[in-house]
Length: 326
Image 1 (cartoon, one colour):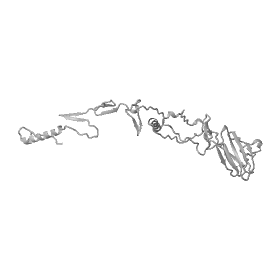
Image 2: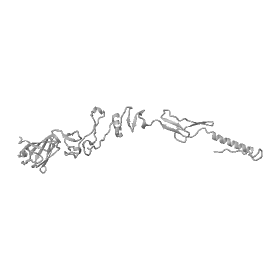
Image 3: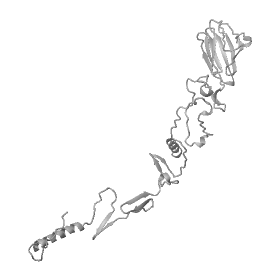
Image 4: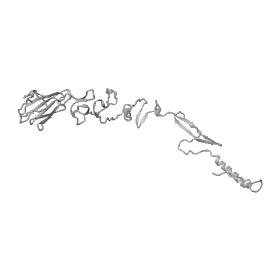
């Protein structure tokens, strides 16, 4: 920008050392042009991307827009060198926030403005998913993961109480899928004194102290087992078991024995093969007088034997139910 020029007046009037008249007025014209360029600005440029505060210039007065908060959500404080803005209420401190419309959580919408919930340490993703299930009438997968009886069993574990559930309470329905006993667990029981068979039909019974026991349901199920190296395996799950005696039995293994205090029985149909003369003995069961089982020995002959127990298999009684059936 040009600078203002000074007219040389000389040391004394008309001493011939100052500017001549033409030069002096040229400096006057130049100075007027400079002042016009300096004071003649009628607008300004906003160097940022937001709203500008300068409005206009009238004569030698610059006019600016006023910064206010029409809904009082922001406090404006004007100091000597700065203008400070502060939010009057933060969401983290607002104990009763109100939404003006639906809440969109990544396209998971809570709508109608009538959802109320209190979260005490629960997982936010699970809580959001349950709200979606209840409010949006959609579907939601709940993965409970692997739930194991904690070390030591008893009441040291976490109790999951779903309360009294009725279908009417869940408009969308809840499908827990197939609940089965983990493979590999047998009648010997797991942690916490559990007695869980690997198969069979029944239900888990809680003794009130955190111990689960398997209580089989008596059903008319039949199976056939074979003799292998003088041994047969009899499963208390089955009410009726058929054994073709292709050789004599010297050992019987009993499986899925219910816990003590639960009575269980099975009927075994022993059928002689085309040779006959096969016998059945063993130390895993008791017989009256210790004389063993009295079987029909003829070719194709049938003998029925009942095995019963009520003390978890400590004593299994073998009872002849008849032979030489015709």
